[in-house]
Length: 176
Image (tube, rainbow, N blue to C red):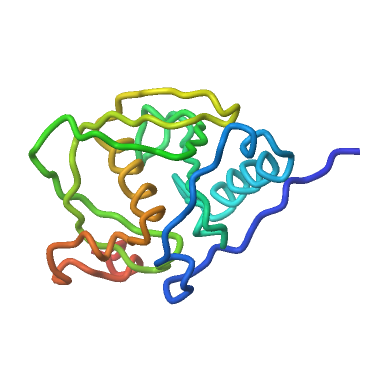
């Protein structure tokens, strides 16, 4: 008998967990079955909600963890993004120029806005086995990393917008 991985409810803007900080985890904590189950549930939640990433505060957990991934061949990013779990992320920007593009958020459903982000960065952290890694991301994957690490600092994409002039309902944008 196969056990289906649980999908968690995504917390929405207004829940204090989205605005509070998170705590880092040690490799020993990462190895705990409850944390490994949380990772699997976050991947399942990301998939269920058609997201590209989910941060632990979005599933009501104040932990320094996010997951991301996208199958290759999708319209959002044809190259795809490898399924990745990241603990205690640290971001080092490899460029100074900001590029604006549309973002949405599972915790702010139905809205999108133009958000300026760095195009290229170096991400370091611990993987799901608690092993340190460093990777370079650019373009859309770099945007996802920045969006998810913002959640770990109590920020949402609305905080990064230069103004609200581009804020729009997703269904209205689709009609245009």
